[in-house]
Image 1 (cartoon, rainbow, N blue to C red):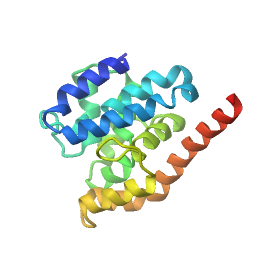
Image 2: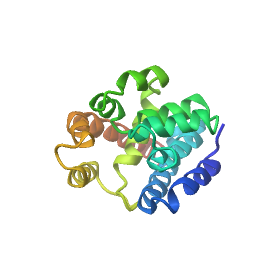
Image 3: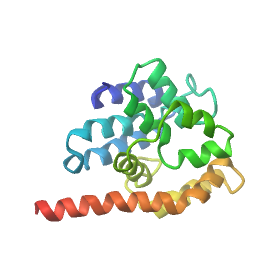
Length: 187
């Protein structure tokens, strides 16, 4: 299994120099994942590793299909020999199925990487959708608006985000509620 510390090193190597803003975002997403450690228990390390690695598919040396969740998951599986669940989390993060469909890659995505358990993918979506491109905390609504401004209405990413907005908000809120319940029960 790739531990969070190792995942940070892989992400740093692939993103820090080539794509410093993606690196900053990944740092913020990983910090957000660490904040969920008490809720996730023995799955916390896996979530943090996925948070570090979720955007590595943007790295020029591994960006082959133009669809970063698939490229990142394939790299983890084929090069890093990562465990299946980590690959599945990277492959399916933040509306990946909708974007894969927009790009004509849904069959490949679903054939190669099964959907991870709801609680884990919801937690990764929460971490990604509440972290801005510079690694700072934000709201899911502000994050979705920022993506729209960055890509524009005709881009595959924006078409996918538009189709999956309510699902992304629901997933983010589900994890926020889990965190609130846990904090209330522990407090």
